[in-house]
Image (cartoon, rainbow, N blue to C red; front, side, top):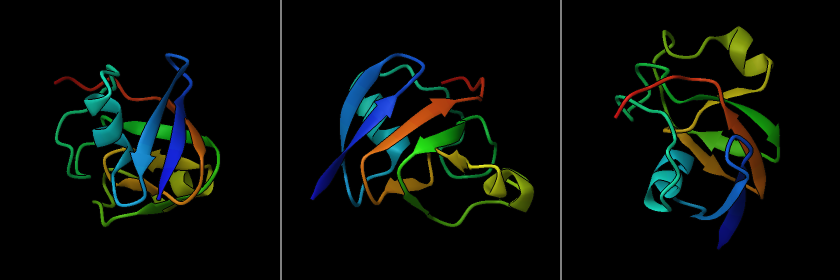
Amino acid sequence: MGFRVLVANTGTTIDCAADQRILHAAVGAGVDYPYQCATGNCAACISELRAGEVSMLPYSDNALSVAQVAEGKILACRARPLSDVEVVWLGRGRK
C-alpha cells in the first residue's frame, strides 16, 4: 500500500510506499529535496509535517530533539508515511 506525499516547497505530489522513506521517494521522483547523510545524523533533511502521520526510524538525538518532534518536525530520511502527508523541508542540505 502506498501513500501520496505533497512536498509543499515544490508543489509536487509523489507516491511513497508504506515501507519507503519520504526522502528516498522524493529524490527518486526527481524532487530536489535537501539532504546530506540520509541516515538521521545531520538534520539536513529536517522538515515540518503539515498534515498526515509518519513513523520514524531511529535517528540521532543531535539531529532532532524531543522539542522539535513536539513541534511537528521530522527527518525526511527517517520518516515513513502512515497516511497521505504534506511536508515542507526546512533544511539546507547538499547532495
